[in-house]
Length: 297
Image (cartoon, rainbow, N blue to C red; front, side, top):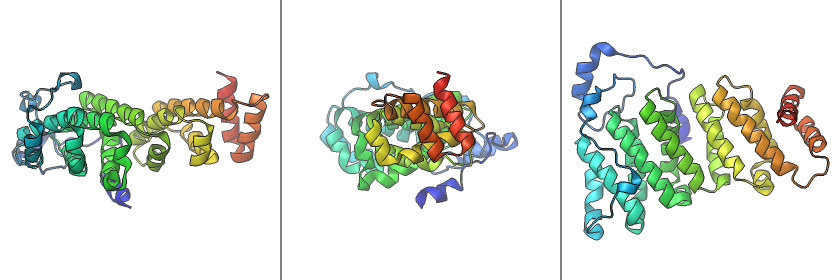
């Protein structure tokens, strides 16, 4: 699977080694947009000081979109990182105001976003994450179609990774993008994508995936949960209840409550029905945890 090969490149511990001694050398080599080694030392903050991070509401429509769309891909392929940032903002404008023109090159844009997210230059990374938010809000389920699905898989992985980093301003932007993703997509197919990350070696990625799963499940009814696999969903939540990070455990508790509410909606003996279901499909210890969550709320 494509995701599995990418997983091998991800960090397996929360802290990354910092190579401060080679900062000057790294800056020189990172001038090429193609560099994507996240283990290299980050650029000094002043290097990205000229980049303006424009909020979505402050982006304007393109004056001549039919003509300008032809230059978008060229700008995204530029070796000049500042030009790529400018083109990413243009991509956001196309997504917000001229989505029909952007749709034929959407896969290409998604792949550029992934490449920019991997780049150690913070301006590229943050701008690409902001672009992904606007693309989610505009295209939603279109990203899950076969022509875009593979590129979306890579983008999802990078967003989970960026949301797990120590750079607060990048992490917060990635969290916003993940919320936009859940808010704009049908829960069931997205949940099927997120399922791959609940056993990820990186505990921070597990936690971020658990949060998105919780948000997905909260949008689903019982039929949608059954289509995914109600027992599988309960087992996922039960495993995450024992995760090392409190973020993951809290998300799992929210997931359990959403499942319980849907499962017992038409039941007269709600807690009894829930207890019987959990005891039939989980280990005694996990079943006890699930019942305790409901009885204590």
